[in-house]
Amino acid sequence: MKRDLPPAQALRAGIEFDERELATRRAYFEIEDSGLERLRRLEPFAQKHMDDVVEDFYRLILGHPASRSYFPDDATIRRVKRLQRDYFLQLFAGRCDLSYVEDRLRVGAAHEAIGMPPRWYIGAYRHYLSVLHARLLGEFADPAEASAIYADLLKLVMFDMSLAIDAYIAANLETIGRHQAALRELSTPVAKVHDRVLLLPLIGGIDTQRAQQIMDTVLLRVVEEQAMVMILDIAGVPAVDTRVADHLLKTTAAMRLVGAQTILTGISPHVARTFTELGVDIGAIPTLAHLQEGIELALELVGKQITARP
Image: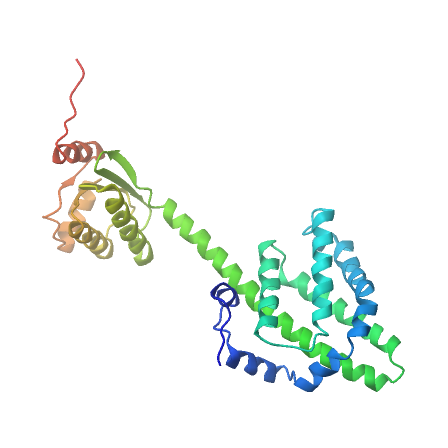
């Protein structure tokens, strides 16, 4: 029966990792059941050398200033050494299934979370394999036997690294996506002017992606606030062309569907002339030169008036 990884792990890998994908990767890395069984029989060897291998592994990482900086305190070092001991034993567990894959994906995501670049990760595992090779040669009198075991370990460690790097890249792209979304949200700051009156000052260029963000943002806020009027101030938009005008018209049409009226402010003589030359019909949208005029009109539309103090 097909079994997929849990959604969080599958997303972290950036792929739909199921039994078919596992079989494909195992075939590519030439990981066979016979090799896994050979490693499983070496569990006593793993138990014997576990602590020394892990200490040697972290001697390189902690001895290099660039990689040492990712392990800020003794508690972190103790934790990662414990996890590395677990990983070392898993190499000799005789399995390479979806549960094993899930653990490997966590490694890559964890390295991305602390900001550790793949170059340090790959370099450390080069040393890791070198240490394992030396231990095997010291343990087995027959160099051919030691080499065969090392070949099995090399396949599995390379398989693990490929998964970790996949997860690292996917997690990094997800992080970049979140940052970009946050920047887009900052670029569409909807303000509440009065009860049921909202204002969105647009600053900078408007491309298709940002136009979609604007529409999504204003529709969400209109519904949340039960707004009757949305003021779009385009005084900060450097250039208005057919594309920008089309985006504005689509946004105002969408707001009408949820029961809100749009007021367009920041219409300079240059923008007005551009609309006319482009043949853009915005006759159904109230347009004003200044934001203050737009706020006054919006308040009138919701039954409020600005009165001067005596």
